[in-house]
Length: 392
Image (cartoon, rainbow, N blue to C red; front, top):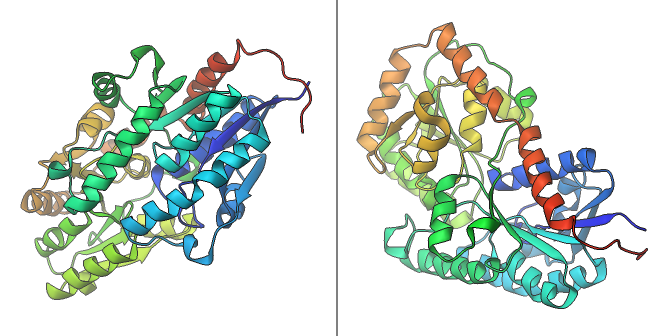
């Protein structure tokens, strides 16, 4: 009898680097599942340009061929077209792999729809992830056309995900929203997220309190276009380090808005950073900020808190649930209040006890425990399946 075959679908990936919080999370979980359940074969299905980045986490990485232009992030329209072209490739690979369990690492239609389509014929178990429910287009922080497309595509994915054997979630708020959209509550599993404390050691206070750090995907829903107004409200000697990658169209727009306000030198756009470079940048910072308008959890916030940095963020339901009073929360969209909170934090250094409390609080968010919760879901899905005979 061969081992159970668990396939993680990551067909949505658009960059050779694994940078976003959700993508880092599924990779770290997969690596831990390999240790927790050696009798399971943990496989990733992804674009060919992601093979090397995924290899350290998975026992096997099965890829489909892409064109040279697919290894970078373009406009939202080009992303949708790219994903549409991958549908058949993903479905074909699933038929060849003959999985026992397919796990969609996000609610992207390029992962969800092939899984649902093939599952109806092959009858494997399947699960998905939903990090957050998109707001209606007129309420979302994005161009209306982009927000509308994202909203519609997520609802299409939801129509398929309602048939999944389990949907993994980060917080209780999303569980309530999905239940209201017709998902069965007994199939919703809150597994949360976590961080590797060993990778984010407690940092000493920065010698100069003039640097602020922002880490996230570079797109409107993450509040990148609030940055110019926030930076403008800070003293001239304060520099904001912006870490993260995203579509070129958004990066160029942000650069133009910073230049228009004469803020280019006070807001440094680093793009994607290796872990070592990120640690160096964190060590120079005195405040971590997140002006995101939607988050399912907040991995970068947890990593900053583990490093003992004070954190300021917009007041989101997920932030209230997960971090409570560990962070300073300001009303969404109030850039003046955000800048005031940064200045106040810079002017009032923490004592050692406060820094230690932030670090200690993050010990409850262990990646190992998160992996065990996800393992329990997978085990429940597969426990009633018959034994499988040897297959290639």
